[in-house]
Length: 216
View: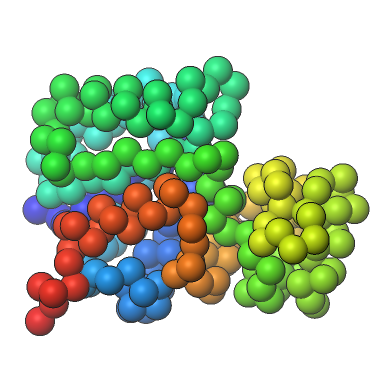
């Protein structure tokens, strides 16, 4: 069986996770405190095509059910903010209950809900974010977000509306599909200091399942 499968809500989230998980020695790069595990995006990373966040919330257990025969562990990740969302707590508890009822034992999977959305992990005052977005400097990047009518307060590490900010910058810069931008950022920027509770939940799950003390 494969070590772990990641099921996410959409293509942009899939590409962001691909950039994160396929970095050389990513477990050391991000200071996660885990040992390496087998990961192949072709067999261990999927998105809920055509469903996005609402569909993953209501039908994710059906997508994940057959994968309990091929993977030891599973991580499900989605955003908390979408039309009709019941909120992060209800998303996690409801989807967790349905996945457990489908046959996955509770110790083998985690549901992670990002508040408000994935882009909260990605924005930083860092040239490794500015460069993939086509900016020469962090100051230029911040100015572009503000020019798009979105708030990035002085001293704040990221825009207040991270998803809208990324979409606006990608659109205005004409730099291609946002999913490719997601991957180019996560393949280069460090998340080791990320304080987002959802990222911490991901880190804790990986530490529990793949503790660094087991490394050869």
